[in-house]
Length: 383
Image (cartoon, rainbow, N blue to C red; front, side, top):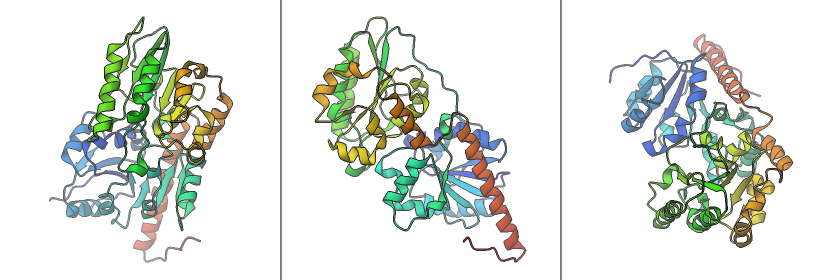
């Protein structure tokens, strides 16, 4: 492969397949802002994935199939920082580049078990949203350097969002379940356990429009129970009507845009509930717990302490009185405190500034160390 020269300082490395493209897509506005001061290049290892981004961003895109091509691309360019939005196995090919600062930024803020793993030790820095993520790493990892964590809030939420939903005079409630995860430990979905009951309860409420927004990976699931539950929810919504509008199944809109048009969110343990908490702490949030262990949930998912929880123990009572929890004044102060715990004191717009500032600091520091190395100077060890 010929040498490719690109004027850039920051590489964003994405090795995954198209159905995981949402992990990178949500970062595009922040990356485009970063690109204004520190040029950004997107590196892909799958052609279909790169094609998917052609219409989504004007950021430069490079496809590198072979490992040798990746090594040479880094070698013959002057990049200083490499960002990773997930823990894809092929990340370790990119991590072999010694002159880059490797930074894991993840694709959301969540209490899922998958948010923290020993893989964090492979990166030079890990950008996190706030104090909750720091506590999460401290609790889960042994011999981990907490100084590698950098708080930047949630830059993905700094964009302007506009609801695509048609006007409706009544109340709009969204049910947004997550997918089933790679294994039982990472399975937080409520869909095949409570999905049908939640939707049936919602469509029975007067003057209430229901928005069903499943995780992108639910549509491609190979789990028969999940596929059947998804089909049943869609069937129920199609068979019921609401005066002055209609129930909506939405598998294409940006969920952050949808947030602008809803009054209440029912969701699982995932980044969805926390994003809603950040953007709309004044609005009711209801969580689910498939494990039916409220004490464990309160320990591992702090946000559950300030909202109703649908579990096997509470479902009968809670689903029969759902509308009683649609008043935004319930737990509003606790939700605001929890917002600060997850996202520090960042207000909308400040996270992107913190993100760009952190990247700029890493670039300057790495440039200084590389210059010192080129001059034969001894780079001091960190204390």
